[in-house]
Length: 374
Length: 243
Image (cartoon, rainbow over all chains, first blue to last red; front, side):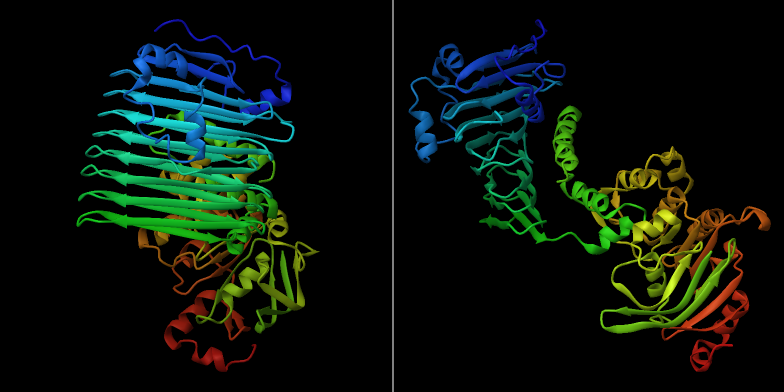
């Protein structure tokens, strides 16, 4: 192992904004992280990793080092997909990070990637994440904005994941934007034989608009993808979220789980599993709670085209059950405590195969929302 | 400890309980018998303070205080607790978390208490999700052990429980009601709904009441009443007036 990465010297960040960065799961003191990429607006503050066999590079540096990243760049996401991808593809000075876990490497402490938006503008990134054969890579991506980003800003993020044979990537993304930010991630992953891709998404804070529909293509035999999303939408927030798994490899399986709460905002929860090969399995689950008038629009799709694929979905949108609240009240909890306890349980999605530190980070994001009274 | 006076209760538009009078002293355990649908659970839910059960007349006095208009949590804080026959399943809420919430700042040894009712392996399970009949009752008893109410209501604690678990649950409930203490030192009171009477082996009940069609029809020695019901059924109770 080489030297430990040093704590990040963050330029001109107020205490409030430092707290916002921390709430997005970013540890500027680097206590429980083995590597870090920090981009503030379009400035790259840090890109380093202490774990042997794992590289954290800026996109530009990686392009130089690896001959244009021909094997990976724009191979999972098409640059022609939409206006967002076209905008990012057209950038002459590309930003973003490339993380490569070389063959057989693994990190117990996660790598953090922080994308911070501090000015009125469009922040664009192109990220490439690779776990080579037998490698295991855990990443926490914290995306946040300054408390006062004037009239607003936007974040366009392309992320391409490549999970090679017998490799594993867990990617935990915590969004902590604000009411005037629009966010357009465009993500896709390609998973090879026995590969595992875990994608976790948490958004407990307001955002003006977010639209994303990450896709995992499970090409290899017995490859696995699990998408887990936990979101709360407050008044003025428009969240169009989805996840898609394309089951191509024999024995490939996918699970897409969403817990959505509206407190007045809109959540469109899409999901699509496409079983193309015999012996594939997929399950899609969306549970929604309407706490205040808003919209939860669940659109689960399962599509099977061969004998021997097994797909299922479960979607429910409802309210807090009175008998559950009163049950807790009969044990001495007041109505607010009982309500918060039930909501906390509703949001509690334990993700198999996720390191404890990352599960704790997800839990603590939900804790912050709970303390604020959901 | 508990005094119920001329109580009338509606569920929706229908009056379900009519003119209920009941008095339970400190240290006493009473048994409530009656056919299905006679209003026994309704009475317990009303005493606990569930919102669906509307008191139209009468009052509930607990330890000298009128609790008629209080919410369930306020009654729980004053010392009323209940073992539910069919408690709800709460997705995502772990039994262990629930117990921590109930215990508040009290320094209860939750794992040890859980072990005593064979629920130590259930602390990380969603509450009541996939629990068997016996597991539900053991979970309920465990919650009550931490809540430690002065007045314990038990809604069919033996239903769906096998014989081995009845002994475990019965002993734990006996301890909740301080049946292991000398009569003079016993401060806790209870009200138990039972159909089979198996639980009475552990509770040493003091009085029995028979409820039919929303009314308490008779009172007496619980074992004698139970014996009578087992021999003759509830037919004569239905024809009987207060004795």
